[in-house]
Image 1 (cartoon, rainbow, N blue to C red):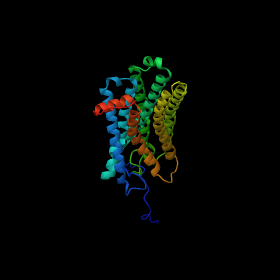
Image 2: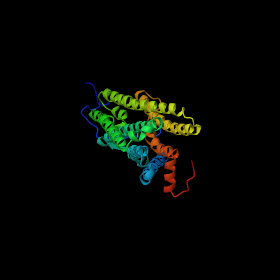
Image 3: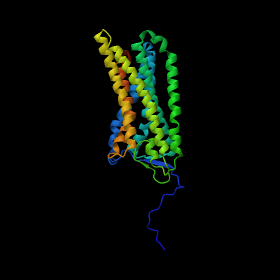
Length: 321
């Protein structure tokens, strides 16, 4: 008879793992705890800067306008996006608490995709707001109203919360019978489903379709809006007004393009075999914490009214044009 005692055991297809282990950043496990310092600083910056934006907008009656309402909503979304991942990442780096239950993992997966989609939607709303303000100034007060802000926000929230539901639902339907270690520090859809013992094609296809169709249409609308703004601005007779508008729009566009470029890179790298698996993981984490930290700073520094509100809040003398 054949002695099978020394043969490796095959995974039990009936067995279902009860938890995942998030290993952290691939290839640097021995010193990844040092990354906690810049990450926690970015997280604290994101929270404090966005809270300041909300306080300033709430306290200054002159800022109770649609443009600032969208900035306030973006601040809330930014804090939600960063908070979805950072507490767990810091517990991994500080306390080596790498385990995460399946339900908790799927909830995090849903929250990440919802907040990323919501941020994309708010960028679209802000681009439309700026387009109407610059290209159709006489119609601005009748088009961009408080009702428009409310309806646009609810529409984006419904769009992203509903279209994102299939991602964790499909992931939960996969069968995880052997491996439960994820070379990541958060529950990314493709990272989790790569551990499944059955076919995950539908998960990958839906993720890519959602990224390219939803994010692609948002990016297209934003680029069209800013192209029309640029065309309108270049026709202004005042060089000072043109320079100011270009400076503001350029800084906003750089942040927006960074946001979408990283989304595209993550989608591509997740679908390809990477020589350096650390790259997509690091990009994924930074994509969820850098925009929340930079957005309020750039928008505030480029906006005179917000700078005035900040100086008033901090009881500083404000001087500037």
